[in-house]
Length: 169
Length: 169
Image (cartoon, rainbow over all chains, first blue to last red; front, side, top):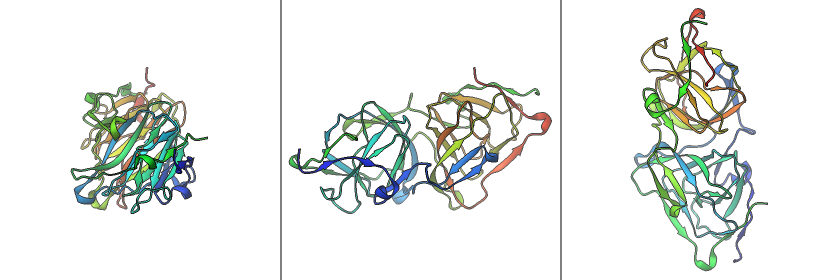
């Protein structure tokens, strides 16, 4: 362990705003469509994927669970695009982020726990750890950039400075 | 009732190919990412949303259930864009479609049942009924076009020619 211990906090709009959007129906603008049969919670995330010839794509990520607590080894960022994740298994998962334009450090890394219905959209350049499933394998639908350019930077933590991620309460 | 009774069939790639893509992991190309922790099932649907100044958006649709059997009243199409739906509740739902460029009729309407994990992406112009949840309210994440132009045509069935949709087996 070291002096950076991350305790996941609830995923709220206000707390997550520096990093992107929480994708959820609660509290969002909506309107009826299809003769009132459906409520549309409209345009919940900024899909920013078209730089340098990119295009939007839909993929599925199947994530093996991590054991918690977890010593993080690295974070990544996509300099050309946003990346959105929506959970399909209604199970909590952990989100670890640091602001775009800074180096991830003890002072700026934040950890959140999704309630299993909430998705997230990382703004372009936001540092993030791969999504952290725990307990069971989890599947996410992912909306991100399809393109040929290099679009993933890594920041590896020194062995003595690996952030230590706690299990949520 | 009339002479068009629709019996939902299983949602398979081959059967759905004239209308778009089935979004699922089974049988799809995938590769490891994040140091092997995640399998990426890559680029599963053609997101075609940028005509006439459109951009991609992520929304949530909360759909009230229909009672089955159901006499369909109309179908719709989006002349400018594709539209993808991924279920978040792991419950079966029904998909009713007819090919782009034709008028929906007894000869070309097809009904499918998703297993509750399978999503669908309608190709631009494909006629479709709003998704048909049954039994319980269901939520879907939707990837479609955000834009100002009119992008929804309706085809109303004559009262005597409403297709009759059966419950799945």
